[in-house]
Image 1 (spheres, helix red, strand yellow):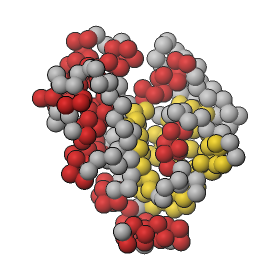
Image 2 (cartoon, helix red, strand yellow):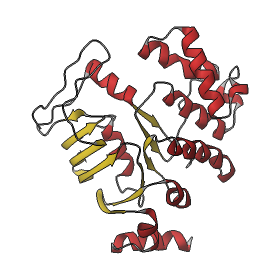
Image 3 (cartoon, one colour):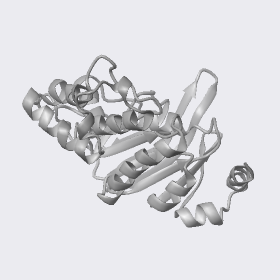
Image 4 (tube, helix red, strand yellow):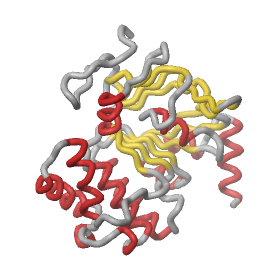
Length: 270
C-alpha cells in the first residue's frame, strides 16, 4: 500500500488510497488492553453487499473487533481499509479529525444499548446528526427521517419520546438513526441481546430487509438461526482470534475447528 494516511478534500471527503474490492479489509488487526490481547492477528475481507455474522463465546473479541473498524477502540496492530479508505496503516497511522468523522458517517453502528436522547422526540433523534454532520436543512432531515421511520415501521411514533417505546421499537429507531447518514457499511453489536425474543424479532426483520437490499453488514450476534438464514458467511472467534470462516451451513452444521464444535455444542445443550 503506497500511503499510510488519508487526506481531505473539503470537509467531508476522504481520498481513497486502496483499490481493494472489499468494503472492509482487515490485515493482521490486533487490539491490546494493558497486558491482554482482545483481538489477535485478524485478517479478513468483507465484500460489498456481503453480510458477515461473527459468532463465538463471551470474551472472544467480537465486539472489540467491530469497534476497531471505526476506531471506537484504537487498534494496536494491523491495517484497516473501509470503503477504499485506509483507516489504519501498517505504521499505526490512523485517520483523525474531520477524516475520522467522515469515516464514522460511512460506517453506521448499532449497539446493544439504544443510546437515544430521552429528551428528544423520535423524529429529532433521527434528524439531529443529519443537520450537524451532513449539513441538511431541518426540513430535509425530517423528510429523510420520516422515510426511514416508515421503513422500520415506526412513522406513527415520530412525535413520541423514546421512553414511551418498547425496547424493540427503540432499537429500530437506533437503526433508522444510523441509516440516516447514508452509510456504506453497517456494524451491529449484539443488537437483540437486551431484548426479549418477541421484541428481538422486530429488529431482526429490519436487518433482514437491509440484507435483502444489499447493505454491507458485519453482525456480532448470538442469534444462530438468523445468522444461518441471512448471512453470506459466518466468522467464528475465540480467544481473540478468527478460528473458522465459511458458509453458514458448513460452519454451523459441520464445523472443522474443535473450539467451534465445543462452542456450538454448548449452545445446543442449553
